[in-house]
Image (cartoon, rainbow, N blue to C red; front, top):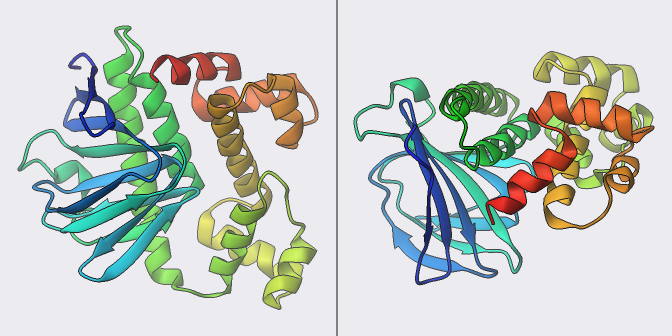
Length: 271
């Protein structure tokens, strides 16, 4: 792996970039309300929103990334961007060489914007690995990048198949209420479906139960809180719906690869 390089640009952006195997991985931080004019990317990329929100305009069509979202942007997809009036961080994965798009499969052939909690969790783990300097960092980053592409590919296919149906409403409700959790009865009432039907259809489409999906969202929310606030780990664990701190720590380590305290130190060291 090339040593991660930190650049502070004149317009206020901060960049942390490294190459691991066939991937160039970059964490970009944007000032509040940052905006840029039309750019025409020479290489396609997958971008994961870590914090904040951004509205991208493609040939008069707007697409917004917020919450647990990622986008696939092909080469030549000219666009402008306007970021939220808050801290904004993204993680970008692109081919390390102009012609090497093989690991990305079909992801860079057309533009997509999709919500996927698992992709956001992997993005945060990769952002943490960018600040690690041990001999395993390159392997970890490359492995996480491959996981991210697999997750993004499945989410994009699922998004294409599901369209804008009632399951999309269920997902949006789950995202909107985190760290709280809606019951199956509440979800069913919101979309006019029996709770058991909601549970079966959700698991069939996502490969996980509603409870497992909410757990991933809560862990993602907890990661954002660890990075942005000074609240204690115990308080964040409680707010995220975990019975105790030790239970939260075990779940967080499985999801992010490090303990909550280590995650907070890694994220803040990169700022």
